[in-house]
Image (cartoon, rainbow, N blue to C red):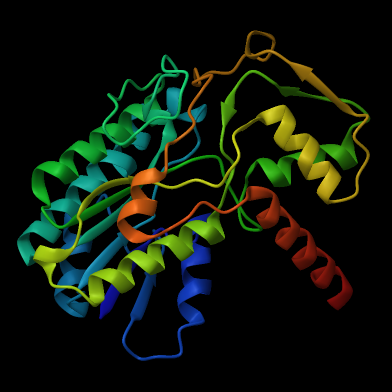
Length: 298
């Protein structure tokens, strides 16, 4: 199976490559592309890539993820998150191949104070969330064979993310403030890559009509606030916790409004694919161990 991966340089893209590198069989051939090698906002670039490599499946991990900056760069955000996704959807429809697409908990608005299911109505609060929701809609309209995987609060050893920000602040500042009234589920990019691998394995071993296409949620557990997550990060990395000060969203003004509650209900993916939620704290411990090994090798 020939698989094109977009967004190869992102957190999830890099973890997908690491996961597929562990597959010693020759049945799954991953072809990673970053923006320089495949610009999904350019239809001709996509067309040429498809005609050259003739993939059997696409993983779209390419995304504009700067939530606050998106409020000022709406056109760029929509170009990547919506137009780029629409281009991929059209080409998948043309070549009749499946599309696996990464989406977000930020399509919800926090009015529901219990975990969001796949059928709950979307009501994004910011430009980023709006662009991701419209991308989902265009996939549903154009690609019958699709998996939309919504996830949340992604972290890894790659790129920029909350874990790395907290570790940096702990070294640079004696006191730093973290929002304590936004609740969600931190999720390891490595675990997301594993979920995608399991879904692709299911697709490979099934006929198209027997694959349970559709929208799914996956996040780690349990649900926490950003403050609680920061506290756990410092604890896991054996750093001082006295610097942390809990504050409200109202005290920490940002360009983009964020949902106060965006916990995802992940029962469906467990019932359909047998995929269970892992602990984000276990994933943190793995990051800590990798960090120790990296420092020891220097």
